[in-house]
Image 1 (spheres, rainbow, N blue to C red):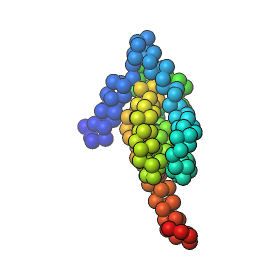
Image 2 (image 1 turned 30 degrees about the vertical axis):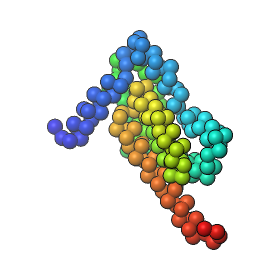
Image 3 (image 1 turned 90 degrees about the horizontal axis):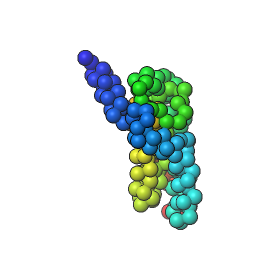
Length: 182
């Protein structure tokens, strides 16, 4: 067996462990909470909470810029890679919410979450740390709801981290190059 085959087998095994058989309490719980991580809901909720807590508005601007970069990179990578969703690997498992038709790798939700939290954390570490459990929930929900393989989520997280790094690094460079008080 090749290294790629071992990764795929491990990916499928972990996916099956994280999903649930229909009609179980675990399946009911996943169906109840998985939708909370859909789209940009966690970050749309976090933004006014962080503003109300008087967190740094600049970190939120960078966070949303990082989300935009992660979404664009994730969509482009997904279109090029074209990996199928895991539905065939988990036919006997409960599925939560709508099952997307776009390609699976990387997970755009995981990428957006990591991009948002990491960009916030670069200038507001306490707020960033507070967001990481939400990022973990989003990542877990993508696999538990049978929408992504675990490696899709890992790849999405890498895209998000790179996007946050690019945006925050670019912002620092612009700040250094612009005239004004330092």
